[in-house]
Each structure stands twice: as C-alpha cells, then as structure tokens.
Image (tube, rainbow, N blue to C red; front, side, top):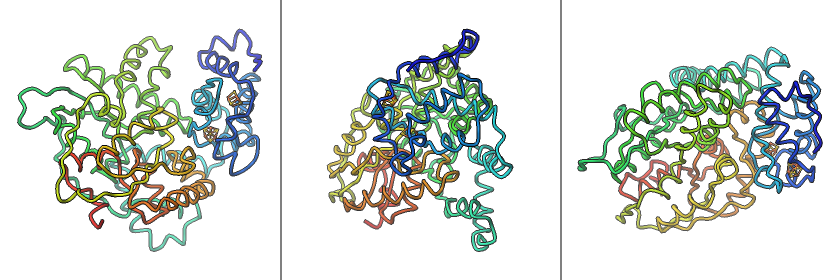
Amino acid sequence: METNFSKEQLKDQDNKSAEKILRKCVHCGFCNATCPTYKLLGDELDGPRGRIYLIKDMLENKKPASEKIVKHIDRCLSCYSCMSTCPSGVNYMHLIDHGRNHIEKTYKRPFGERFIRDFLSTVLPNPTYFKIISFLTLIAKPFQFIFPRKIREMIALMPIRFPKKTLPKMNIYSPAKRKKPVARVALLAGCVQRVISPQINEATIRLLNRHGIEVVVPKGVVCCGSLDHHLGKSDLAKEKFKKNISIWHEEYLKNGLDAIISNTSGCGTTLKDYGFIFRSDNDFKKKAKKISELTKDITEYLDENVKLIFINNKENKKTYKIAYHSACSMQHGQKIHKVPIDLIKKTGNEVYDIPDGHLCCGSAGTYNLLQSDIAKKLLKDKVINIEKLDPQFIATGNIGCITQISNGTKIPILHTVELIDWYTGGPKPEVLRKL
Ligand code: SF4
Ligand code: SF4
C-alpha cells in the first residue's frame, strides 16, 4: 500500500512503525474472511482492511478521529484473527494500538462513554476496588432494573461468588522435599483473575512446585497494563508496564529468573509486546526486551521445560470428552494452539477443537462490557459450536473467555492448568466435582 507520511511525521517512532506496517498491506482482503465483526456486520469498515484505511487516513492527514472512525475502531475486538490470515505479515496489532492512542488523544467521547471507560480502567486492574465493586453489585442485583441498560449488563457479568483461596499469600513458593529447585520462575498473579478464580494461580503454583520449580510473586507487581493499553490510555498503561518491568528485571538480576509465567493469555500477549512498546525508550528498551523474552504462557513453559509426571488415581480414571477453546490472544496473539491441546491429550482424555474455533467468543478484555450487542452474538455462535461437540467440559487458557463462555452455557469450563494440575497429583477442580 502506498503511503504519504511527510519526513516530519516519520520522525515520530509510532508513525514510522505504522508506515512500515501499512506498506506491507496489499489490500487483498483475505483478512476480512476471518474477521468476526466483518462476518457479523458485513460492512467493509468493520473488517481489518477497512479499519487499516481509516487509521491510515487519520494518521497521514493528522486528522482528529471522527465519530464514524471511532465507531468502527471501537468495534474491533483486537482478536488478531486477521493477523493469522494475512499472507503479507501485516502487524495489525501494532497499527490498531497506535490508532487507539490517536483516538484517545484527539477525540472527546460523550460523557457516559468516558465515565464507563474511566471506571473500568480504575476498577478492573485493582483487585481491592474490584472486590468492593463486586460486593456492591451483589447488593444491587435485585434492584438492577432501575439502572440503564449498560449498567444492567455490567452487573450481570459481575461475579456472584468468590472462591476461597487455599494457598497462603507468599512472595516465594518453594518446592517441597528438594534441596535446590530445578528452576525459578516469576508468576504474573493478575488482577481480576486472582479475585474471581484464585484456583488458577494456585493450580499453577502447585503444579510447578511439584515438578521442582520455585515460583516467585514479587511484591509490587501490578496489573499487566493490557486493559489500559487496549482502551488507548497509553500513559496509564505505560506506568504499569514500567513498574512491572522494573520489579521483574531487578528480580532477574538479583536472584535469577528462568521465565515469567502468564496463565492469562491476554496478559501474556501484552507482556511479550513490552519489547516493541519500549523500542525507542533508552531507559527501558533493554529491560523491556528481556521481560518479553522471559515471558511464557504456562502451557508453553510446561511443554518446553517440564517433564510432567502424570498420576492415575480413582478420581481421574474416567475418560472425558473435552472441547478446547483456543483464546484469540493464545492462538492469534501468541501463536500457541497445538501445545495446550497436546498437553491435555497427555491426560488420556479426548480433546476436540471447536468448529470455527478461530472466531472470538466476544470476551476480548472489556469488549463484552463496551460492545455488548456484538459480544452477545459472538457468544451465542461460540456456544452453538461448542454444544455441537457435546463435551463434558471445556478447557481454555484465558480468564476472560472462561467468564464469557460460562455466561452462555451450563457446560463446565476450566483453565487448562487446573486440568494438568489435577492429573499430576493436584485436587479435582471444583467445577468438575459433579462429573
Ligand atoms: S490480508 Fe493482509 S495484506 Fe491483505 S488486506 Fe488484509 S491486512 Fe492487507
Ligand atoms: S482484530 Fe479481530 S475484530 Fe479486529 S479487525 Fe482483526 S479480525 Fe477483525
């Protein structure tokens, strides 16, 4: 694609990257074929190629974002299905991130939208605020009919129960009965996930400890910053990125780290992008690159580094039929698809890919809250495809998908790591207790 940035504009690193990306696009439109919003809405501007043109026009012509552009960019899930399909290697992820930052800087959203976006950006990354709001929404549930539709939909998505933690809060979890751990990793403990599904981190820690790996959860690490990043709030996101990078890097230098483990693929995708985000920041670029290199999804780490010891007991003797839901951030963002399926197969169960599995379930960070109509349609299609397989349960690697899909079906859903933990000597996951 021909571009028309001026020399002056190209002094800006983000414009320079955008130009490189745009030049790779040959406007073939293959990406539209796998874009969930194009499939649903049928509008060229709701597909990747159309959005690429909108962003190009905004950036090249130094235009403030218009209502029309914002509508179509906001409808993008950042699922990156288009990147998996594109034959030219167009990095749509970096382009849309830049487009969203431009929107945030040049467009004043209506008050209601601004309020909701600011609210989400304040509450979701902070576990204490999230807990308080969750309890308040529990109280408000019986009276939710008095609230506007948007608020009612948010209330409906809030958790109704908070599982108890079974592991004490510590900064270092050491393997038992071993003098020297075989490896040392940091775990990204997350924000919302640790409140609504603490069992995911617990299964990760138990599983790693059982295989001789020390797990550290360094003090001071905050939300990975994905949420602000995808809302276009780049300054807030960078504050979080820098804080985490500094803490992990110090831990790496002082005590050594073999990996940084993410068990939420949405967050892992962002961590793996820290190196790019800080590519022109002289203070952070080396550290950020190191953190991205160290980041591994839990399934990726297990596959590459751990000889799993599976244990058969009377609890897990039965063979289950499992549908594997490949989160977009996992399959398109991190290009990890086969690894979790192969790991699950090692448990002796039957694993099936969901038909049209490349399409998003509608979760996509805060998308199901901000674009609820589209998200509901995507969820409906996802559930139809899952139910076609008639599985006994669903496994996936992202808390957002777990929350979204469990709102559409009664089929139990759990994190892949909970399953692997169970089959290597951990407790039977609570969602499977009735099976
Ligand atoms: S598939 Fe790739 S090259 Fe073709 S239009 Fe889409 S982004 Fe451009
Ligand atoms: S990221 Fe997903 S929703 Fe956005 S343009 Fe690409 S395929 Fe479509």
